[in-house]
Length: 135
Image (cartoon, rainbow, N blue to C red; front, side, top):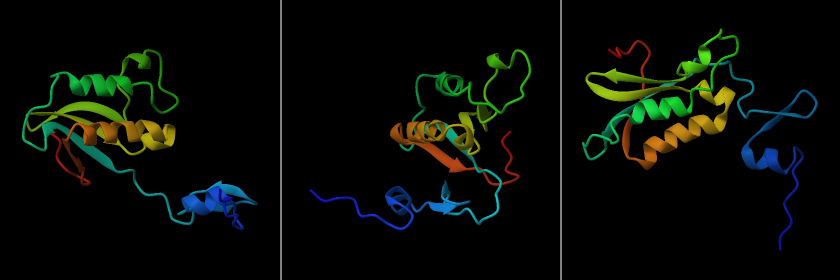
């Protein structure tokens, strides 16, 4: 067996590219970069083969599963709303889910879940350009 190689910033930090900040607290590898606007993704209910994805309510189910991931401070009754970070929409006649990368701040695995769902089901996924018309 081989022992893990120790680095000046620790084994985990060296493996993940994490930097230590403020006296040894872990920080992201790009801690010196300014915060950018979170990206948004459009997951379409069409497979790479051009077929409609089934079941027909897939977008509502997916967004409903993530409805608890929301910013703090929403008022009474907000528990029955979709999360603003994962919303079902119809774009150009195609059922879609719009996912905001800000979801990663609340729960990293939630964003991974949505993007892996799209990948595993061969759904067309694209990054939404700033100002892109989603009507």
